[in-house]
Figure 1 (spheres, rainbow, N blue to C red):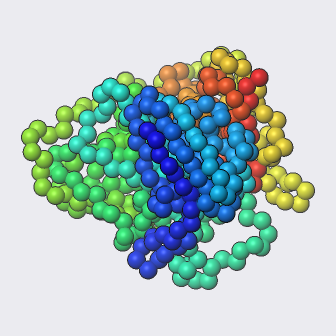
Figure 2: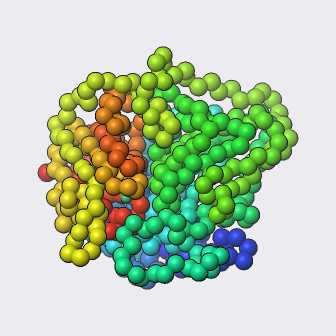
Length: 431
Ligand code: C2O
Ligand code: CU
């Protein structure tokens, strides 16, 4: 697969009458879908035509370090008018994101629209599905759309990137009533691929239906689980199967964000010919109700100890001061003045992440996937969740484990990019 991608400034219509300045990949918000088969070679020639330095990051993909697109860490930033060629082998199969990853202005780049979906189809049989809906959720800050006066900018530092400033919620780049309705035939099985490219946790509800979650962050759950609210933290992905068995017209919405436009319709149009959906989820093992939960999903079979590892790092998120500025800290350190976590190729590494602050922190590790092996002190012997981004709420302690199998220098950071821009970022570095 070969493709040219150019980032440039456009005017984007969120809904009729509400047009905002945006930055877009190939003129689209969200950017163009990249869809390839596992094992396929991907070659993307990227050109930067926006007026700040940037780079393209392949979120969730274990690409070689030099292709990771973390400007200032794995590559020189791509300046205005410059080009950079990304090349890697697609894998593993799953739902991913590519997005801008500049050095200090990540929140701005993401806010302006430099996000896009990337899907990798497996070589062998995938889930059975009659159709697929790609659903990208995002938030926008649009001063003109505030009914009251826009909030004053530039007073003191705003390191939290207060979420209430985002007054528009979008599905696939549009706010209601401009969102596209989802059409379905009775009897069909629909694969949902939900991607959150905003800074807030979203819970998507398909009125009249309870989909089966099959994948988190692109990786299959051994036991699919049925949920009413599909919760997706920033830069997480959730795949689910929805059985279209209740004809009518239904709402699809985030209860918290629907008034800001994050809603659409699910509309039945006719009936599927031939047999209905032939999919039976693998039953959950006995006693699964006792499993610790993450966003409503049972995370695996409880265990009394976390097991043994070659390295264990504790990472505590707090707020601190850098001179007279408030910053976010990891173990008291704030990017770029951080002590990297050292690992060696082949090691099994455990990270214990703790959130001592009032806000959510969706923590993301570049270049690797991790198992979720402990939630608030409850260890998990047989982990079902394999992810690359994990949301820590106030006072959460979550243990994750990964195998050091992709040498390089990798970022670990909060994906609420306002937090990352204000220091909430560190590194895993191979010795
Ligand atoms: Cu989704 Cu450091 O990135
Ligand atoms: Cu954060």
